[in-house]
Image (cartoon, rainbow, N blue to C red; front, side, top):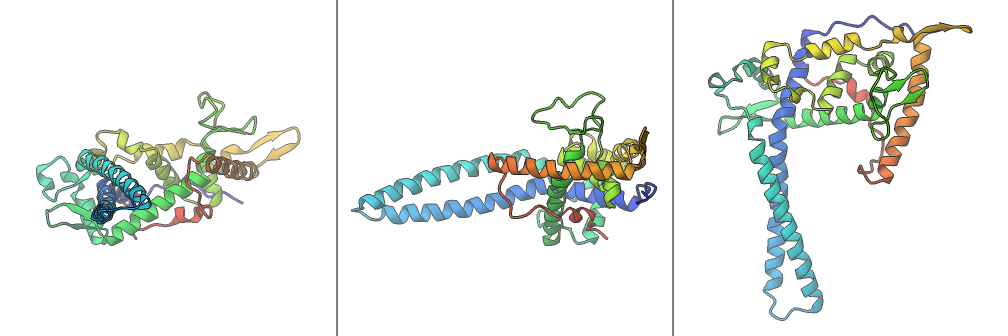
Length: 297
C-alpha cells in the first residue's frame, strides 16, 4: 500500500482531545462518587443482615459462623468506604465550579460550554460541572479506546529493528538508541489516526497531568503541541524501507512483518498476565477499531 502523507493536526481534533482530557479529569472525582454509592449500599445491606442475626437470642452454630462472617465483611466494607471517602477529598480539586471567572480556570469556559452543547456536561445544583449520562457513556467509550490501545499498540513502543526484538518493561532496560518507537508507523499502516494513538498513549501514561500547568496550557491551545511534535518526529512507514544485497525492502513490508510479530507477542503477554492473575480475564480481545471512533462530532 502507499502510505498517505501525514495529515495536519486539525483544530477539531485538538478540541475533541481537549474535551476528552477534561472529561477524564472530571471523572476522577465522579467515579469515586459512584464507587462510594455502591459501597454504601453494600454496607447498608450488611448492617441489616447483621442486625437481623443479632435479634436471634439462641443462635445455632451455623448462625454464629454466619454472623462472624458478616461482621468481618462489614468491617472490611467500612474500611474500603473510609479509603474511598479519603480519595474523594484528595480529588476535590478535579471539580470545576461555574464561577470560573474567579479562578485560574477561567480560560476553560469555552471548552466547557462546548461540552455542554454536546450534551456531555451539565451544571449541578451546587454549581459544579458534572458529566451527564451521555458524558458517562463517552467516558466508558474512552476507557474502551485506552484498553484497545494497550492491547494493540503498546507493544510497538520499543522495537529493536536490527534484532527483531520487542522490548518488555518487566525484563528489559528500555534505554539507548537500539529501541525504535513504531506506534505511529503501525497506526499509519492500519489507517488509524496516529494523533489519536499518541493521545491515548499519553493519557494512559498520565503524561498530561504531570504538567502542573496543563489546564493553563489547554486554555492557551498549546497543551497538545508536544503531542503534535511527537507524531512528526517518530518513525513513519516510509522511514522503515531499506536496501540490501538482495534488493529493496519497502517500509510497508517491514511494518507488516513488525505487526505480525508484535500481535503474536502481545497475545502471549496478555495470556501470561492472565495466568499470573495480574489482570481480570476477559472474554475477548478489545477491538482496535474503537480507536477510530470520535465522540464529539
